[in-house]
Length: 190
Image 1 (cartoon, one colour):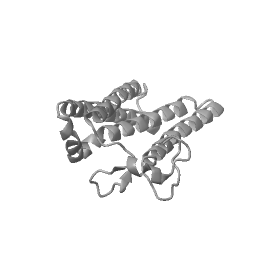
Image 2 (cartoon, rainbow, N blue to C red; image 1 turned 90 degrees about the vertical axis):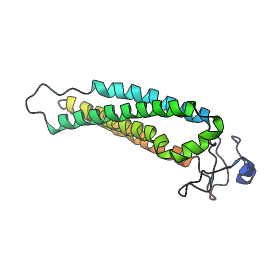
Image 3 (cartoon, rainbow, N blue to C red; image 1 turned 120 degrees about the vertical axis):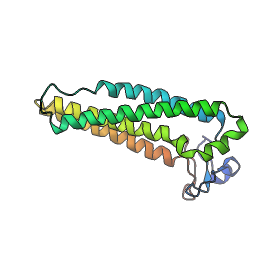
Image 4 (cartoon, helix red, strand yellow; image 1 turned 45 degrees about the vertical axis):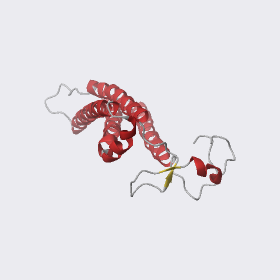
């Protein structure tokens, strides 16, 4: 599969039909849901969500002013959203893990399909929490470096590039598991 020059026709036997989802592509190279894959996914998400939520909690402090600026309020609200989203992600992951871990292996795919909204919730909340956290960090550096314009600009550029690279990575990875007729060869990275 990872060798250069492998034709799509050679992959026909390795292709797994997509789940019964009208929006899913007709073919996918994703493995079917199993107890192990589901519990691994939610465990990884819960750990990372708790970590980012803790970082965001550190940003939850209003400046010592009577009249905070709109920027200070935005930073505070982004941190609040991040903490809540990441906490929700971690807790929902723990609930899913508990249920999935107690299911018999054969019941997991049907259960995961039936509760797909809940299965997708931890990653969605984690992504929202991370985005809000990164944006709050960008705004904090912009605020704190106001007297140092060149450094403020550099911090802004770094923040925008970091957030953009996360968005592009997500977009590329989501598309990397779909087979399309226009692709004639599989990349070694797939």
